[in-house]
Image 1 (cartoon, helix red, strand yellow):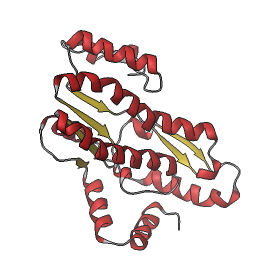
Image 2 (cartoon, rainbow, N blue to C red):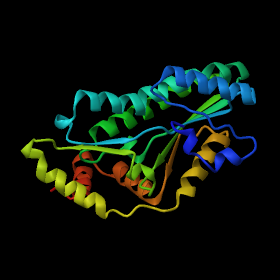
Image 3 (tube, rainbow, N blue to C red):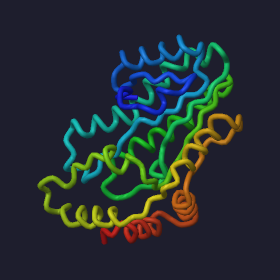
Image 4 (cartoon, rainbow, N blue to C red):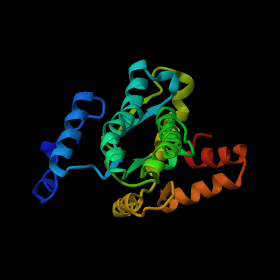
Length: 239
């Protein structure tokens, strides 16, 4: 984790190593992987969960905001994955569980950068299975819906509509609607599915989590693009 000094519960457990890991820092990644290998001998499961959501009109995003979103959500995932693969290949076993989102298969307004990274994670993970499955390594995608976690707080980075008048009203409508949405409190549900994905040994690739995620994905499969767009416009209040 980025700030292991803030963690209190895990540090008191036996058989647990808490170490610093910044997915945008190659030195940090190398040190964290080495620490894990020194402590446990091998890495059986990698859960790529680092990420945040940059929200706003694409035209209003600075180049720095665009690159930062990609660095954390996508390039960081690649860097950590590459760092653990030598150990997994050597032992011919392992599981890589990439935390995507229902937003890796459907999109919402003003979330362009976030969705771009999650669609990329989905494509990477699906393709990677062909390279790694023959080596005894499984790749998995977990797709949570809406849950009340820190993602809705410190892990959101709104850049809004800037000074672009054309986007001001729809952005205001979207953020108002977003504040009204109800998110599940059952975070344990997501943890249980991550554990299932890591340990079930199956060929299953995708694991949607949450009633809202399952329902949205079902609707997406049943209707055409134009119809589904109307569903999202209605749900997000931007019309």
